[in-house]
Image (cartoon, rainbow over all chains, first blue to last red; front, side, top):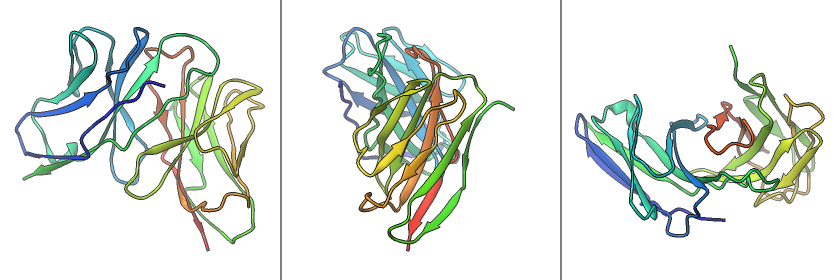
Length: 114
Length: 114
């Protein structure tokens, strides 16, 4: 399974942009890049996903490197509510049985400084 | 409202007892997943199912069992064979094939073995 690597923790000041990196050097052509975040004592929630092109939604932006071996989740203006653990995972596009072994790493714990 | 429901939210068990955690979804999703999370750690996949009457082992299936008799239900049994069952358990569901689909998580079940 293709794996992802993220920094264990990051800090950012409130109301400033945050760039959360993710390395996935063994990504395959059929892997989508997904980001989730988890608040304390809650289940993770979906943030954004993409394949090749950069993506924007109301929560964040996803910048994907041209070679797809890395990506960056961008929170444009961090608030205290953005303090969470952020996970970057890969999802295979191929509809084969057994390929949905979705693996989450330890993620990046984002701390927002007031 | 559509969503995924886990019960109970908190559960205490004596050593040597089996316990079953419930996971129900009304999203009409084909795929369902069980994850385990230990304090300060990421999510580890226990079992997953892409279709009714079929399921696959994840990375840490030993000491756990599941069934998928109905599309909307994916209960997890923590057996007495699981050596360290105290953890936060998360259930998730998704459309399948799910390349662009997001995972929807329940609120989790926190199991404590006394």
